[in-house]
Image (cartoon, rainbow, N blue to C red; front, top):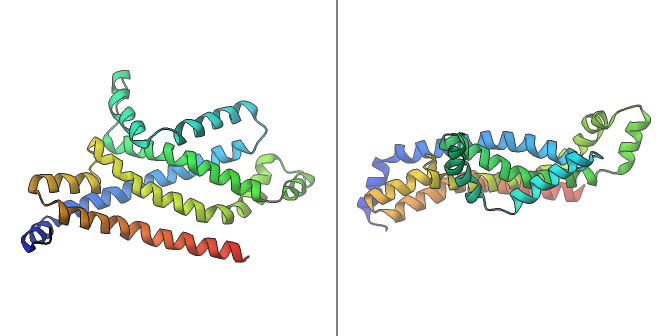
Length: 219
């Protein structure tokens, strides 16, 4: 595993890992943007009095939190084409990661909204605001501070979960590292570098989340 010629071969093929790393970052960024949108919408619905919408939101969260991400990704990639719906591996990865992480993010947003004192709603209503106006102007700015640390942790999970794209030839870091290792039979160096690249993304975010949690607790 630590033979010099294996590491030399790896660094000669460094562009393979850099390209995979770039795709991992891109799919994570796109998925994060969609995840935040889903989390916000579903979280707000869960705190509303809209019974039908709440039922749908509850179904969505129950389904996606309790089924494996890999099953969801493979369904999108292998089953939907039989229904005439075809997505590229990259798009399947973005959709799957967004729906899966959004289900967890929605509960974070819901908890953050419920943590804001109820009196804030009543004060907003007394000023003639609607539910959505109260949310936008009064509740969400306060809830965002509460939700930021756990949502940062969800971002870390999203980045790590992006490795499932390797199962559908998504071109991500994990897929390219595994392919290169299989071709050259140099598994040790390949996965050590892969682990360090994931660590370079996830560790700073984890530390950031920990610092945020400490600041929230001390306030």
